[in-house]
Length: 366
Image (tube, rainbow, N blue to C red; front, top):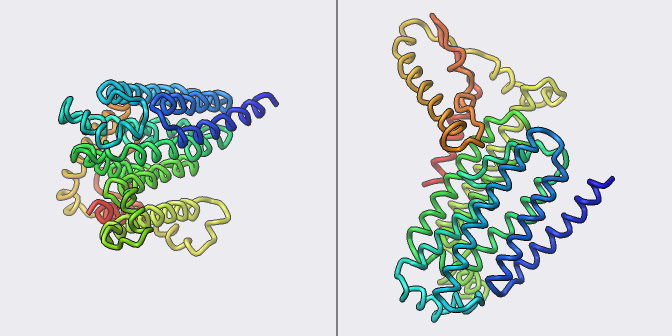
């Protein structure tokens, strides 16, 4: 029908815009291609959305795109005015960076921060992944195409292309590393609390992108380092510690994804419940009852944590980020909801999953 033809045409436009962005040599061309990716994305979302949740995601996607467009336009204006050129190579040359530093020593770092924030908005990392819930509800696999063809290549290319500005200040590098690590951890945590497979897959993909950006901030994918390594300069090769840290983080996200999906399938009524994960499914249905004496010790801190979790939940859903829908107690089971007089219950399997996720998080950030 007409929506399928429109989706095919806009998907082709998205591919062309992404390729043109990678080949762009000027700031104006880069900005035009960046805007073309956003425009085709909004068109594809409009054609693919047929449910109320998807229609709500359209507004979130457009607002996030407009915010990233504004940050990138501001960065382009500052680069063109201060360097006196619209060619990317001239802006990033030694003379161009010197002119930026002469105008204001903090200007290169500020431009790097603007680019990092624009990339985070485009990639859907924290705090800009509120549209994932609605995007996962789209009837057609448009979200994966937009994310993998348009958003992620453009964001990674921007970090690679303007690496001298991103690395010009410790603030921009710390922002890139800290926010990407936080985005990876939160993406994995939020994915553990999702009931729908497509929504969980979306947040797990966000966690993967966070790991990649954390590697970029550590210098693992530095262009000059890779070029020197390919040419045989072993002294400029990536450090083994950085490589091991990134691989451990990647492995943690993958293992967490497999455990979450296998556990959810085993606890469901589908045929997958007959698999070798059946003991874990039986374990998840067991309840641990704590006697009165122990409850006196643990009930107070748990109730305090319950109130704190509810406060953070309302802050995220109603105040700071209205587009987020997070249920913090659900990450660790239903122990807070099942708190009763005389006994305390909590889900053993979910509690173990929470502890394992915490350990993997410590491996990722240390």
